[in-house]
Each structure stands twice: as structure tokens, then as C-alpha cells.
Amino acid sequence: MKRVLTVAACAAALAPLALTVTASAASATPPGIPSLTTARNQLNALTVANEGSSSGYNRNLFPHWITISGTCNTRETVLKRDGTNVVTNSACAATSGSWYSPYDGATWTAASDVDIDHMVPLAEAWRSGASSWTTAKRQQFANDLSRPQLWAVTDNVNQSKGDKDPAAWKPPRTAFYCTYAKSWIATKHYWGLTLQSTEKTALNTMLNAC
Image 1 (cartoon, rainbow, N blue to C red):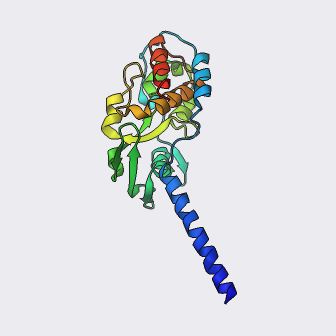
Image 2: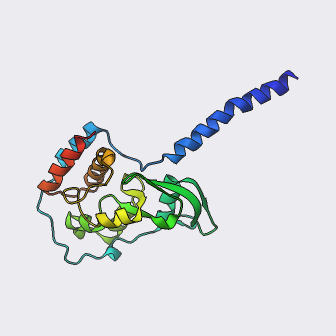
Image 3: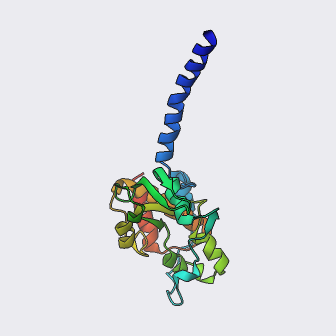
């Protein structure tokens, strides 16, 4: 009898732990978001320069989405990483789940309403130094799952952002300014991209919201 009670007690103790893990997964965010101090240091280390030309830019020069594992490509991987209770079919397409968009605070239950945003847009990267990269390096940038470059967000919010930098566009949800700026800075710093003086000023202002 004591053994049965012990097993039951263990199961009861483990149940809350399982729920905690599920809740943690629901608030998943991209990796590599720096601390405020690190973000400020990275921002000051970035090279300020006039923005380059868009001449020659084409999204196809940044191949995406690529296969990450099995039948899952980068988009599908981010949807699973950042969604809640995501169910996928044999082709790795999300058939159900919910996604919280930190840019505007909206929650969606259809994957078709969610875009995977490049924190630093591809065209912005092109004008900031990526025009001189190899296609292989641009592919790595466009599918970067190791840094805060890819975000699951409301599709029309992503479309309103387009290829604008923080001097020209900021997320509608001001509570996200801090994280947005830190993520933008970390991405540009890792990839060695330049920034404009107006962009740096905007990022410093956004960091003041931290």
C-alpha cells in the first residue's frame, strides 16, 4: 500500500511540473536577445554609415525558407517554436495552434494569419552591407534561428513594416520597443551590418523604454 501511495504522490508532484513546461513553451521567443548593457555596447560598436543602394536587390538572393529538419522548413520551425499547442501534419504544416504577435499584442489561431518577420529586413540588410556577401551567407542570414532575427507576427503588421528601419517604423505595441531594439541591434552586430545615424538615434530612444 505504501508503494502505491508513493507512486501516486510522485505523479501528483510531477503534474504541476508538466504544466509549467507547457506554459513556458507558450511564451517562446527567439534566442540571443541581449541584456540592455550588452545591447548598448553592441550599438556603440556598430559602424555608422550612409545607407547603400537598393540596386541589384532581389529577395531570391536571400534563399528562404530552407529545410531545417525532416520536412520542416524555417517558417514551420518558427511557427512550432513560438506557437502554443501547435499541431502539424505529415508535411510539417501547422493545422492548429495559436500565435501571439508581440508587435501588436494580437493572438491568431490560423497560421495563415501569421508572417515570419525578419527583424532586420532583407532589403535593409542589402543596403547595410549584405550586397557584398555570398549567396550562401545571405541564406544563413535569412534563415537565422540562432539569434533574434525571426519572429512570428501578425501578417499585416509585418507588411506595414516592409523594409523600414526603426527610424521609419516601430511596432504598434510600445511595450515591445525595448525588446525590438535589442533584437535589431544584436542581429546587426552579429552580422556586421552598418546603420544610419537616424537609425542609431531611434534605437537609443527605444532602449530608453527598457
